[in-house]
Every structure is written in C-alpha cells, then in structure tokens.
Image (cartoon, rainbow, N blue to C red; front, side):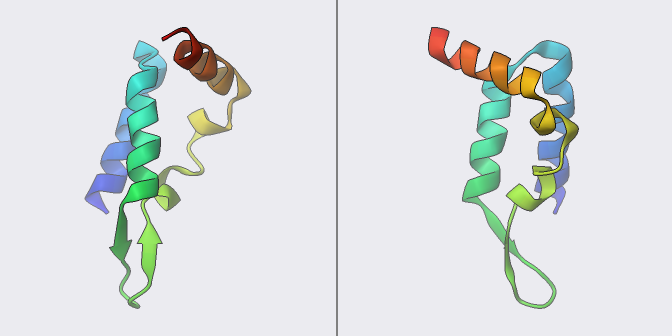
Length: 71
C-alpha cells in the first residue's frame, strides 16, 4: 500500500513538472503490480490511482498523447 501512496504522490508532481514520462510509468506500474488484501483478494495497484484528479482531466490526456506522439 506504500507503493500506491508513492504512485499518487508522483502523479501529484506530474502536474507541476509536466513530466508525462513519470505519469506513463505510474500507469504501467499500477497495472502490472498487485497486492493481497487482508481478505486474501488480489488487488491491482491501479485501484490507488484510478480516481486521481489528474487522470480525470481531458487536458492531461490531450497533452500526454501529444507528448508521446512527438517523442
């Protein structure tokens, strides 16, 4: 769960630095890794970031895609 908090912190910083590469890696890591909850259920780290304000903004996705196309 600490890693989930770290991913959220990084996404908070992405806004300040327009660091789309870090956002990309946060999304990938959140979809790749899981943890086992107290009831034994396998839970994706994506659960920690899926409601982050940054990921709900269309302006972020527009800039993110534009950045990835130009690279």
